Length: 372
View 1 (cartoon, rainbow, N blue to C red):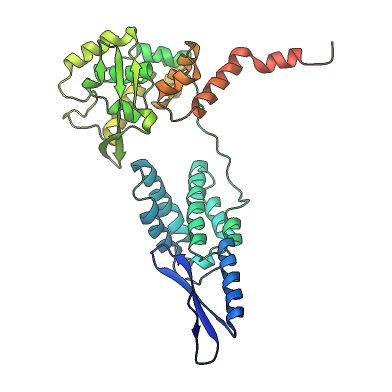
View 2: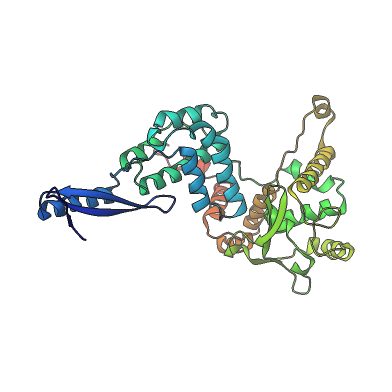
């Protein structure tokens, strides 16, 4: 490192601390009366840098920093992922915190934002997930110190979030699926979900060429992603998403017939033959739900205006995994057929079903005890 002797007799060195979120190089000048003293100060500064305790004053607004952070780190992510971050920044963080300078941000500001959205537990989770990443980058840019960065989102009062239950279809839901007066496209979509356990985006991207009735296999290799209302075709969710699934004999003839009647290449399109948009999908699913409810609703429920069946397409995926379990397939084979990148999700479902099948709690309470 070069040392410069100033006219006042002191020595000066400029230490590079890194770059800010805009790419600007950050440097700090150090002064000392001797080279030895200067070297000691440089050592101490570098140590502070490693510990994240150096802060360079910045007048940047939080809104400007968040927007730059998104453009730098999230704008190239998958469509749904970047949409989540963009939504959190534009609808929550910037409106509540955007006019503060970065150095003004306090834990109470974040807690107040969470409090104003306390009835939306999932949204609060996403806000904190995003904020922690942004604050961590502020720490890297040396505009906030490590202690403050760690404390800003620590021990916040958060609403309790209950994840959607991962379960199979109930007997009544299965009855509704069987009895519903679906048109042929609706029935085909439900059959894809039920017999192959595909994700919604995988089902919507299926083409007639994906079916090999000689080998009795369905190939899953792409997904239809919604960017706002528009649709685009991409590779499946992960490398593990590319897979071949056995076509059950019960549904083979249905799909042979369905593909023969199909005009275009894709199994599920809008009425004009173009790719399914988000609004078109929602209309189709609304009709599917309506017909399922009509198939099993009681007179009393009609009088009370109750809708007994409320499902998303993903319930059929968990139902498929449950059927794999009761078919006796191994966890490894289930992971392959479901198209997961790892065993974690399948293990959760299989473990839950193991406990149900074994009646674990009941057997432990009845048999593992000292009393007679």
